[in-house]
Image (cartoon, rainbow, N blue to C red; front, top):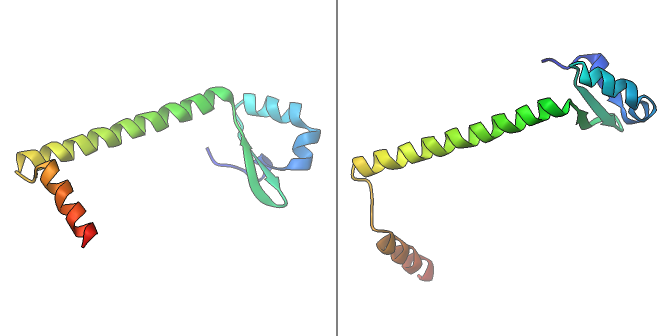
Length: 96
């Protein structure tokens, strides 16, 4: 959904017309509230916010699955080393 010029609202106007803005948001609009001419906060429907949070959780899960797959590929290709050996080597490098 693209933000139109009508969806950008100065903070002073948002204060004066909050109920009207809330109704527009509930009907599907998203509003960007500005302060001193710069983006400040957004006003969106609570259900849409929940949806955005769900999408973010799903994205994190997909990234974790991708990391696990890369790890399994490393194991299958023999690109592994003992954790104690690797940690001791790093400690020795830091001390040097």
